[in-house]
Image 1 (cartoon, rainbow, N blue to C red):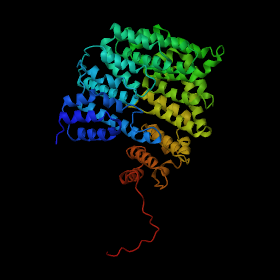
Image 2 (image 1 turned 30 degrees about the horizontal axis):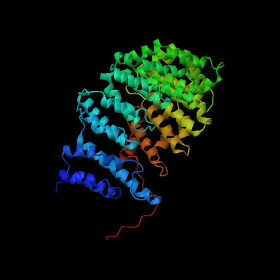
Image 3 (image 1 turned 120 degrees about the vertical axis):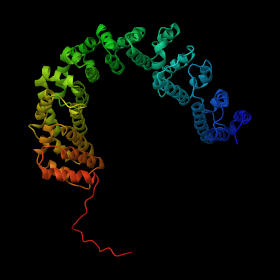
Image 4 (image 1 turned 90 degrees about the vertical axis):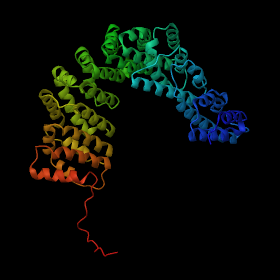
Length: 512
């Protein structure tokens, strides 16, 4: 039967005594899933203080002692599920003036899981509006203030969603005096809260030059953190600032504030301030990520940063190599980056890739995986390369491999570590998209035989990659018709085909 309003009100009343809560919540949860009650009822349930009391950690009924814990956890989790179900049914209308009052209890709740659910609901609704092309104006600041307050909470689980919401709704209200005052307050909090404010400001600044102007005071505060003594905080701020360079108005703000000069000078003055050495990996990461979106600016404008990177790549030092190996593909990931490195740093690139070849013989397995991944990103391509870039990449590869062959890669494929095997085969697959890459494979003794073998003990992902490589080879003009027929047969049998052992005598099959 449909549960009418009086049934729901009776249930809410039954939540008051603590000992019946679990049972009552369960029957409400069952009812809401069976027959969707009217919006009016859902709003009554969402407005009921008793429901929020049940979701408080430590709200369970029963006496003290160990037994009190069991029902309590049950009560909290069912209360959360019920809240979630109600909110999904309600579909919040963000232009409704009553909405802040309705969500207030949830957004100011002591249990971060409750706040997280309410914020996720709001975020879903806003994303739906963005998708449909129409973001509704909020009637006033009430809801914005509630969400901004989440950024001051100690727990982190809901703050990321709060930042997403604010990045959408604050664009229209950035010059509102109340909003500005709230943002100023955030900058007076501890460093975790300040970093959330910086992240929000970067998201907003990316949307337009006008928005950047409105949050410039927050970005300036972020830059002032770079004079702080706290290395971790500086590293976080650098990471947060990177997306600002994606748009030209953000890049020109960073140039006006001399961000790149200030940060790169730290690397040049390491003798004066040895503690900055701890920051070098973060600084490298920063310049690498900026170079991924603005290659010209970094590769041509901050060549001393690249000199420092190439030194690190030669260092054999396993503490700095991981970041350095991740940074090079940021510089060389785009076609423009590849050409700029070729024109401005060709000798350094050749030395680096020759060193990579030597590293395949001597570093720890995790670093070798990183190195292979780094090459994979450099050689990956969305569109076929120009003839010029194809030649540059071929030259770099020959430095790495010591000629047009793939021995280094095959040596790593033949190790007993699946991680290494997978990284080596993934690189091989990427290289086989180039004609010279297929030739390098063909010139390598044992490589084609390995790909065609059906070893049983290989990891299933290894088998799949082998199959994908053979798929590329089966359409390559570099092989004889006989070889191509073998490749095609393998591909048609599929990656996990098990060959029948022909040397085992088979029993005659009698009729059952």
